[in-house]
Amino acid sequence: MQTKLQELTEKIYNEGVEKSRQEAEVILKEAREQADKLQKEAEKKAAALVKEAEEKAETLRKHVDSELKMSIGQALAALKQDLGNQVTMQAVQPAVKELFSNQDFLKSLVEKVVKTWAEKDCLDMQVVLSAKEQEQLDAYFKNQLAAELNQGLELTFSEGVKSGFKVGPVDGSYQISFTEQDFSNFFKAYLRPKTSELLFEAEK
Image 1 (cartoon, rainbow, N blue to C red):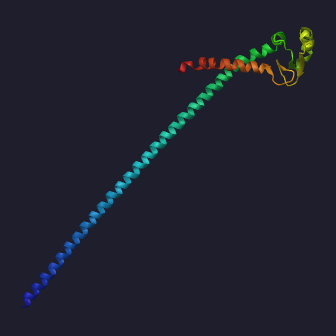
Image 2 (image 1 turned 180 degrees about the vertical axis):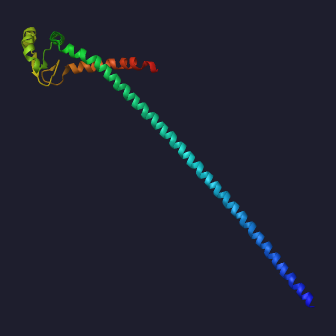
Image 3 (image 1 turned 30 degrees about the vertical axis):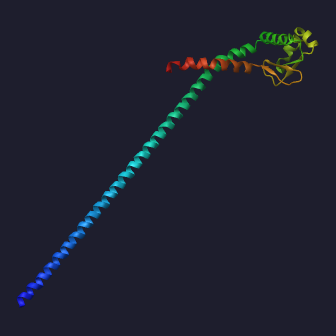
């Protein structure tokens, strides 16, 4: 009897131990599966974050590259324009300055403008010349344009005119400027495209 009781006790004990072991294995298995699942999810999220970061970095790189190219293009265009302007100015300004320092050229130009204006039978006209040249020009034009001065032409001198002259109606409603600066600007605007073409045509 004692032996049977002992056997029964051992059997119950062993069954309990085996059941506990099986339950423990199930728990461990579930824990491992859960851990694997969490690891895979973490790896997936990490991969997604890396991919997103790489995409953002690539987008930023393209944006910076585009901005750099645009800035370099603008800087190059500005440099070309500046070089073209300087070359054009060096070509134009000395020639125009020399031309306007020539009293005969200025006298001839004023006379032609006045005569052309007079052909319209209207000498309600004012010629404004440089005050610094008044001594040289006043007597000359009073002699050469005497008829026109008697018909309404006004001849004045102004500190505001540095070189050349300006013409317009006596009422001052408008003026047409024939100054050294006006001629320089005209020739620069005409020559600038040609200068740029000569300087940079090799790049095309």
